[in-house]
Image (tube, rainbow, N blue to C red):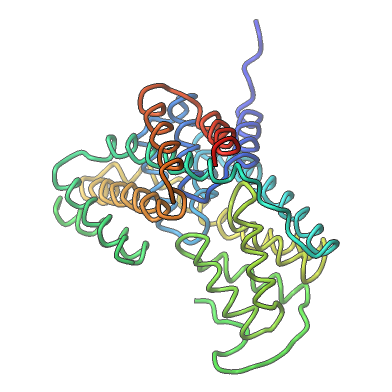
Length: 363
């Protein structure tokens, strides 16, 4: 009889593959995880997956990376948390570091290939498919459906993600029952980057960053460009672009910045510093997720947060549409991909690959 696969080995393989192939930002990562973890492998029921997503949304840090850590905890405790988190983060960090080396060595970023248009169109369909599946599990009442629609509208109007999640949770429960910067604003000081300064800066970012990877851009521009003058604005844009077109967490932008400033040691320190707070937050909160279901008002709070999280995923897909679907051909790719995902249990990786192939042929 074949031996049972090791939970840690399974976690490492699954999340390393996801970290190596999941393009498109947090919403796309979550969609791919839902398909892999819930639909294909049955590691978690969809309701528990939603609870973990809600918990990840309530603490600072990259949501998709923290979701991977939560899943790791559910499968294999503290060791699983570390293995799943590292397996998901490390491919992106290594790829981004290689891109940073190429950037410093040759002075340019790699060219983005034509299939990217097809990939973006397919990703919109993948995100919509996840929102559809998770939404069916999250809508437990008409009140939750109304709440989700309100969060969707508020998000599209520019509402803060954390505020919307907390407000939704508080409303649901009621129905049922700064780390300072290194330089003060307004001052201008030109300091050479140091290993300690770089580490502390990205520790601060990882400890207070809410929202998508785009929020990271505002932090880096205000700190590293305007106040510390460690980067030019063009270098910042190139770093963000590298984090966007490589797979895995967008926060691998920190790896790129660390390499630009202090070489390979800087890349390692920046990566560790920006992700370390997430491991701590998830270790502190993951054991509490199950307890939230034990009392009516905390369960109602979590139900509302989950509904709000689905609404935020849907809002991301809607905001991506103008850029990802600029013409009829991209729209047709997205529509066909969504219909396939809605009708058959297809691995989204195949959908994205097909989108790339079709994009190379027709776009």
